[in-house]
Structures are given as C-alpha cells and as structure tokens.
Image (cartoon, rainbow, N blue to C red; front, side):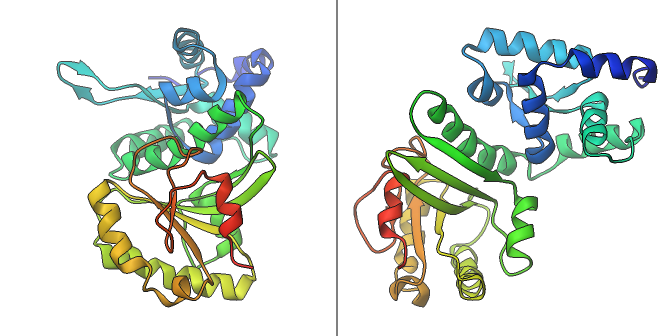
Length: 271
C-alpha cells in the first residue's frame, strides 16, 4: 500500500471537523478505541459513528483492525493512520512521521498482548465521558499510563488517572485494571509503591482497582484491609468486581462493606 500523497495532506487537515480533531487528539493520547467506545465519546447513535469512522479511514486519518471471531467478527479497533499522526505532528510542531513508522506502530498495536488491557482501561474513562455528556458530571482530566509518568515518575505505574466531579463532589483517582493475569500478592504489592508516592508527593487521591470477577475481588479484599497504609488511613483504596457503570455505586472502599458512587469516594479520602 502506498502512502497518501503529501500534496493532499493540507486539504485533508482543513476538512477535519472539530469532533474529528477532538477524537484524533484522544487517540493520540490513548491509542485505540472500539467502534462503540467512539460512539459513546462523540456520537448519538452507532450508525452515525460507523459512517464517520469509515470516512476517516478512507481518507487516511484513521486505521482499523480486528480479529476474526466465528461466527462473526469482533468490533473494529480504531487508531491513528498516517494523516492523523501528521495532523498531531503539525499541530505540536513535531517532525512529520514516516509512513513505514506509522504502519509498524499500527501492526504492533494490533498484535500486542496488552491490547485487551488497554481497551479495558479506556472503557472506564469512556463510560465516564459518556455519562457526563448526559448529566451535570464532568471528567475534568484523563491521563493515560504514559502521561501518568509525568506525575508519578518511577515510584508507581498506574494504568490511568482521572479527575471526576458529580453533584458537587470531586474525586481524583489513580486507576488499576486487573485482567486476572497477575497473582493477588503482586497486585497488593502495588500499594507499597502508592504509599511511597503519597508520602513523597503529599497527594491525596483515591486508588481504584477494577478486578476481573467477583471472586477475584473477594480474594483481593481478604488481604487489602490488612495493608498498613490502608489500615491506618494513609491510602483510600476502593475495589470493583468488573460489573456496573463506573460512575454508579459500584466502588467498595477497603475498610467498609458498602458500595458507593465514584464521586462519593471524595468523602472517604485521607485528611
């Protein structure tokens, strides 16, 4: 496949709608979305979303891939193609990316064993944005794993960060998505890193663990409350069993038996 002609790049940039630019920016930060995730983010129905995505794909703005799953196929996964990357590079005054570099980037993403994990992480934040579109809530900030490093350095490696406001309550949180591939003791060990980061930074953020199943959450919680930084109130850790909408009452603080809404975790933060 030959790269799109450079002479047409400027024309394509001018044809981008504000919603297209916003989606390109999000993909630049968070790498990949499914069709349904894009619909939740920016459209009112799946048919309109599909039509726009197919158009952006035909123009070299977005690339798509999926695995064949009999008897049908899974949703398309969408990421930036060459002209999407060219747009971001031009906007950020960066060197123009090469066609071969972007092709390799797309292929690595499609073959990545962490793709399911990345989509699961993005799904939580996409659901929050979708909820905020139809309510008075707001996701003020969403940081990717890479962007989190600008704050946490090497002390801790969250999967994401959010700043959520709803009904006058505001909670900032670090997010950990568990796919059931790590032993419970290794997941618990991350709290040592969070405790060190909290002490070094002075920050007071919730730490959310979304587990892969109710059984995984139960196993995690049997050890959670005994962690020194949780028991003495230095860290607010809340868990979810993988079910329910992330804005709803699905989060259970480590030291209580009651599930609360995400925004209500603000009342449980360390003083």
